Length: 164
Length: 359
Image 1 (cartoon, rainbow over the protein chains, first blue to last red):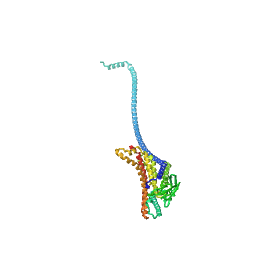
Image 2 (image 1 turned 90 degrees about the vertical axis):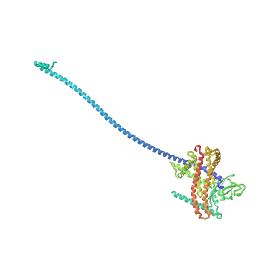
Image 3 (image 1 turned 90 degrees about the horizontal axis):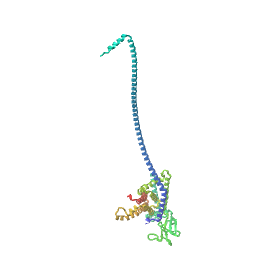
Image 4 (image 1 turned 60 degrees about the horizontal axis):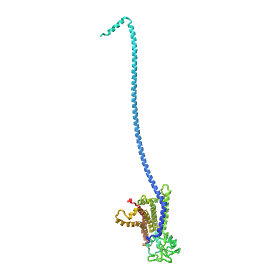
């Protein structure tokens, strides 16, 4: 029966010892240890999530890079195409313009030539007329110097004219 | 490295068991004609005592502290000269004290010798409040010193490190502390409320475990049966019980006194059972630890005693290997018992904290 009868002395000492342990360890051992463990776990968790984030960011960055590269390529392509089109257009425009200009110049030249020709012809005509008159005058003067000739002329002319 | 340590440990256990055996044999030699009393030997060991028997006739006296009608009385236990039959009378402050089977009695005034009744209880003496540093108290104080040394060193190693990584003993203790947190406190008490109970659970676990281990080491200044003493286990169980009551929520009492969702006769039937259950839980807690540790000591002592019961050295061939075997098992048992005590305490706190929506 002694074995299962608790002694007051030991109960008091145990309570005292346990409370002292609880107080001192709680303040100087468990608190710092648990805090350190928790802090470390938190920092590990943070580091892991940060690594995950970094990985995601890296992926995003890579995707971005690829997208930008693709865009750049497409832009280059379109720019080249545009340039080619522009070149073609400029060339064709120039050709057309040149054609028109040439036509215009040719036409002007033709017109000038025509008018020059006309003027020249008119000039020639007037000179020819003058010369003819002069010649005629001279011829007439000579022919009509004697009477016979005058009469012959009249006769010829009268002969030409057919009376109807 | 691991293997070498294990071998060293086994060797140590073996040697200490032998040492104990020799110590016991010395005792036997001094009283050769008397038949060997196994029960006496075992009970002498597992019960508390004033004075710490080391080996043979060597024993360490411990202070006796008594609170009497005349105030505090202190003297060393050696004043009794190893007498436990109440024959040596120590007189201090006009009061007479005797040691009857490791219990200090104060003789009634006028009496000069102790007289016993049929059950050998003193009839003319009473017990003062005994606050002596007994073998168990001595062992407990030693364990306190060891615990402080271990854990304050561990805490310092955390404080010294810049990245919260412990060194030395802290490295060894951290998995155990984390185990108590993750496997005992959090699953039983809950993620949000466990913080408050961690200091209690950790102190409880290490206090029990280290005292259990001290009990396993079979030589001075260890070997006392402190954690197999009912006063020790009862005190710790009472702490658990008080904390359970203080953390209890409305739901705990409602669940106990007026079980929801049952017909009224059933409620009336269950309420007394639940109230008994409330007290049975800590009682089971205290008996489990007391019985397991005491049983461990009894088995080891019984196996060693076989040598003296059979009165032949050849019995050692059987009893020593068995003792080693049991001791190794006890190494496991003491850790498991400390764990179970802590685990169940956490479980009771969790039950007390349970709220309606948890169901």
